[in-house]
Image (cartoon, rainbow, N blue to C red; front, side, top):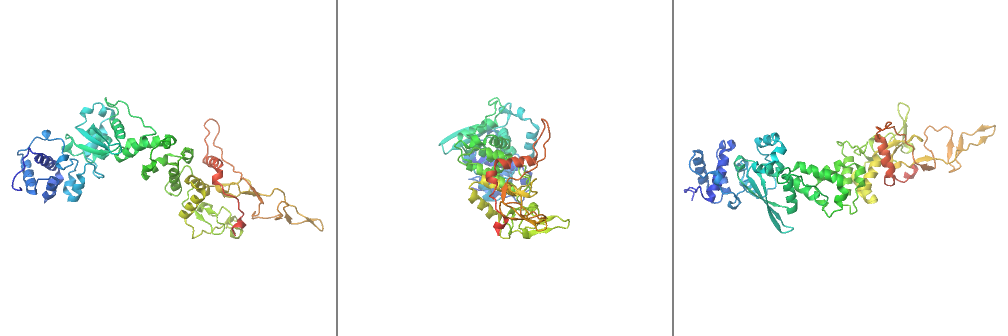
Length: 493
């Protein structure tokens, strides 16, 4: 058969001419020596390498052939997907066969430079006015296995490529700009119908943009992300941010949202907004707080909700407190760790526990507190701190209720000779008290809330809440989760 030419008007001849004329337009293929005719023949059943090479030479010399505008429109029956790119024809046989699938999974080609320049220069509103002027019509076969339904959709090629960039990788060669190609998609029919209305929004057929709703936004988000509809993905993410409580109340599957989309959604939430989400079945709330925990430990993230980060979190092997490096010399440790620095200030020297593992600690908190929401707030309270205006201590927010005091003043006995003793006793707890104690270690037998002096956010209508005020308000609102029970330092011995 290799010695007999292919009839140009036959189905095989039509397919062969379409591929070869595409290759003729490619300078890359023209400069390729030797040309791999065996690989091209594999793409077109019923042809040989000799026939492909001979027909290529005939087309180069301008001889014979059938006008391309009269070609058969559907090429899939010939075993070829016309979305195969020119460069893929020069690759291995395996990669070419994978490119012939009716629904390719991935590709790295980005379309021609002319396509990009055209989409940048034409205004979107003008582009949509008349769909009949947007290139050949693409037929999209949608198969809904769940409902056992099939439906065909039509869309102009240029509009489809502009809106669904997934197809731009396969429909951007010049020879296909005016050829119709059949595309098969496995998707919910109703969701794809919504997507088509979005693609054609602003046209005579669909002058208004379809509305996102709580019961369809998740499916649309997943589909639009797969089809690379960037503007729609952003709209869905913003809708999720504003309507998350309504979304989780619907019977949607939140588990299909991938980690990348989850990160983009969580980035829009403050921790107060995440806390306000009403999620009775916990479809999404724990995932939001899991992402917020990740942000606490990410050194590259500027977190408006937390002035401090947890990247340097450690446990002191002496006092067993969990601290960050900033608190290392400020928060008290055991009396034996008290030192005087070169400026005469008292400082404490905590010793990091080498056996401490932050992942084990987080899992331990999860076991104690049960939810990722509570774990986040406990960690947030651990890494942020205030200074008490009454006792002068720097304290983590988890120790907000640990300001120690004596309900009664110390009593000092008068010694013989009328001299008052330097050592007294607190009647409330019978602890000894000295008149001059520069360490201020034994401050009380009972505890109450610390007093925090907060900076003013300004006066008048333009007054704004300072970051410290916001942190303090968050602490008061969730102190039952953030704060830990009081223990004396000696209890850790």
